[in-house]
Length: 156
Image (cartoon, rainbow, N blue to C red; front, side, top):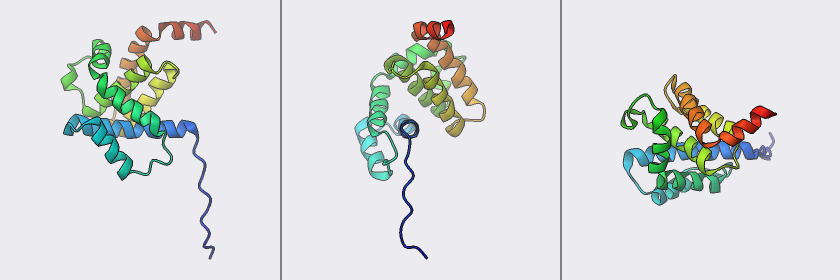
């Protein structure tokens, strides 16, 4: 029997960012339901979770950015909803806010990545078909806020 621990698998930056988005979704869900401050929630998540495989600065940026800009984000994507904002499932709402934040405020993230990452979150945490709904809403928002990037991609 070997007492040595196996070396820890190196986690890619993509996976670290994916983990940050996952934690952000869970933190936003908690914020939406419990109403704690972003600082309280962030501190709790840092204590309660092993974030060694997480892009912690991204987690912090997304959590604080989404909460501070929620009114702007909601107004940007609500035009593409087929129901009232209050009628959205809390997971869908959190995913739409994260995706919208990345589309609007993190322009270094390609629009397809922002949408795909949100769709993946909806697949993991959302209702059965919510990923299709999230995809449709964020795709329409991208047509508005990333039009130059989309046009350039089509011209290639």
